[in-house]
Image (cartoon, rainbow over all chains, first blue to last red; front, side, top):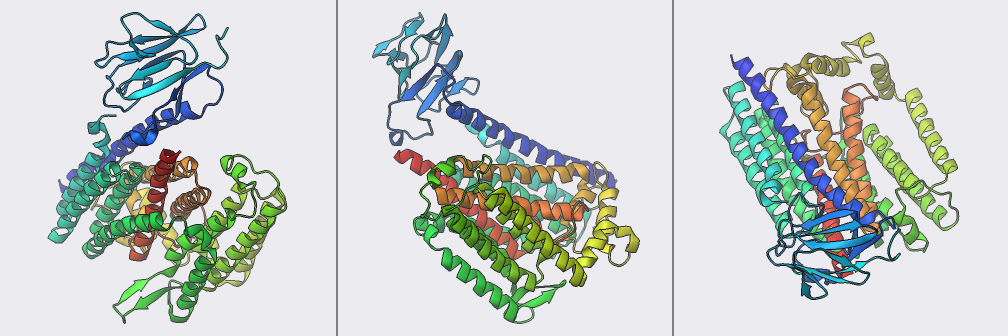
Length: 150
Length: 429
């Protein structure tokens, strides 16, 4: 009886270790995703450059974020570009590429998305090099060095 | 990530300690209540430390979590083997936590000064070696203990502390100012080394000299395990810092030469190698340790016999060098693999800190420390599973032993400090 009980508990013991490892690796996975985004080089056509001073912000954020073809920006774990600013909505806005241009669209965010100081309405707006995007406490410059990509 | 998710690992640590305490209390009647209090204390300390690290912005939050997990598993295994060991081990764990944060604060306070102190590290190491040789005591064929305060006094193993000095020395040498091309090299340190002569040659040679001195003393003390560890760390260092292929080969040849001399003239090295090649030839003599270890691992099978159900007392030195065999017997290969994974993740975190770090000296220290502790786990786990010849060193955070526990904690405290500095400097940019 004692033997079986201890065997079962030992299995539970070991499974807990695996669950622990899983939860750590999951957290690390998000880290790596954030790091790849930062390091991948000149491949992307466009990126967002932060213009806030990072020491004014109480959370970790990178200097720039490369944009892929479709990005959901927000605070939630399911966003493709996750920013831990508490003034952002869980799904805040979307930047996507269509016909070689980038467009920005607000996703019904609580505090709104601002393009060059004007709040976005329901419609997507085309981004051009040098546009200022403000979401939550964050201000970004949209940079597309090569102009419109073919 | 939400707060609930980032607290999950902590929850698992507490759960593990609870299940472990339950296992200990059903497996034997006379377990002391002190042990249960101490496992509880580990949970509390883990919670506090994790909260401090995470919310006070001391850098990497995972490092301490993984260490707590390893420490908890170690504490429970020690309690199961002998209550007295377990109680002392858990006390060492709590003291180690203090060391961790102390080392972190010292490193943070002295970080501008530390790269310039290479002669001091060498001096301190030599002093410790000399003290061990003069006042030391021999145990298991190695002269590596200093006993303070009489027969039952505190026994310390200076070579454990020298590990940290050794890494600091190598880091200081390889990031020393003369070569201004260093900046470039740092960024592609992880790439293949390029042959380089001139400024780097001086650094390579001084690193070799320091390593030779260390190895000389270690071999005098017959600490082959730690000597192997130091050499491997040094070898990776020269590889990463751009030694030419010829120089790498020369070093490898020198190591093989020393090994061969040891094999020829040193009795106990011969014994070790014979026991490794064919332990069953003399299973009750030379091969006793390794065969008992293998029997235990075999007995455990996939899921183990259950904590408290194995016959771990047949394994010699079960509480220190052979703890991994006991884990495999009682938790099976499943449990053993989990432990290996924990070390893997821990080493990965250390190397990631090194990669993310912007200061050259700190980068080298982070690389060296995480590499060394990763190699240490490899050497002892490889040893008890008969993958490589057995050399007696401790399994970090699990093996019984105060010196090892405190200095390993201090080493990871330094890593924690480095990860905290990283954030600080990027903020200044």
